[in-house]
Length: 155
Image: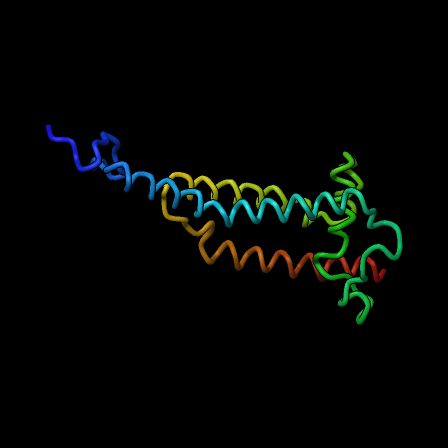
């Protein structure tokens, strides 16, 4: 069997022998594909580090939610900074009380990030995480949570 130009016996993802120069180019593209998930991870780590060190429970450290400031009602995300702060410090019950919806969605976001990164590492196409029906269902849950948390605070 003849060795391709470049003398490499490496195989491409589709099982065809590739010369070293092409294999190196493919490997470098793998690292560039990982820039987006790495950037998302770096941003998340930086945000969580900041929230961990600067307590959102103390007034004046973070701006007030614009929706809360204008209407007096909480948006679906209100309490998420305090939830993350409590979660990082190991206070699960307190974290749940600040924003249960964000508490439940956080693991889903982490799983989505892992799936995204694994697809890029394996040179597989990045598939949608969900079909339209679950996305519309999630939107409905967010709206019901939004209404429910403001109805209970009004009573």
